[in-house]
Image (cartoon, rainbow, N blue to C red; front, side):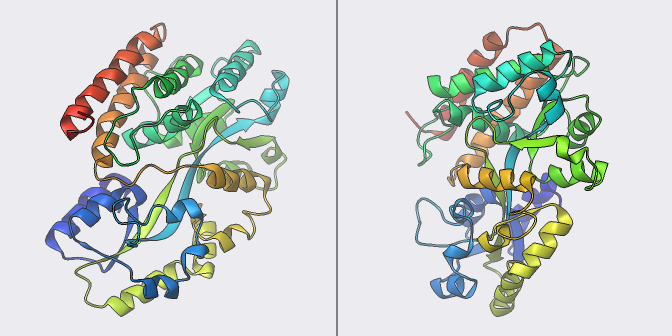
Length: 365
């Protein structure tokens, strides 16, 4: 399955109760699948057999239960994903920017872009967000940095139109001024990676899995690699990934559990993640090379430690759909009209989206 088509196929498996015994799912898909009654919960004995809660990164374990049923485990963490900032060290140095503080706050990010542009770099910033979920995952760091949030933990109140969240939105969208001037829409991940690898961009924000692609482009022994830096985003990084579930229709439950146990085993995670540029959810794997020894991966692990996940609530899919596609539209509109006043466009649009979602979901009224 691809990420683009995965949800549709999993929904059909849930509806027809026919298909595989074990599936990989996006972390934010769990609540919707559990609601259908198609997912088999893990017993306490099965969780212990699989290694127990202490085996996994805490933020990953937060995404296996639902707020309404914290005592029930519906999934087992498998792979982790986190957003980080990539930058060229020499470009920051030539602009007189201290990499240690360049991205600590939204204000520092914007100041860094100004300094880079003043040093002669026309397009210092690259933002990935051609998909609605990706755009929301990236902007979340700016919202959280300002003390805002997207929705309340219980899913009963829209929060992304509150002043703190709005401050984060406005700071994030001001960065459109530092994107390549020849763009009229946000780019796919491969396009952003190419612009960065060819040094047309000084800074970009993307998935931690991009690191291997960037290093491979230059060869891991190249001195160019030392010029590539990683940094935490200005607020807590979005942490996502994928979990493993056992379907309710599974008839070979013992064999299904054996498969889950194999997939989350230390050696399997080491081999699979090293080969596929993924991030393991097991703590003991993260203490192995390259995660504990490579300076780049050390930043990624720190992002995991300090990052946040989206809430596990039934209405999250609707919020992600409506708000996410709106954010992509805003970004594309600003890129196509570089002289546009971004606050005049962004603020009323975000407020209108919040009102529409509040009515659609029947919450906060």
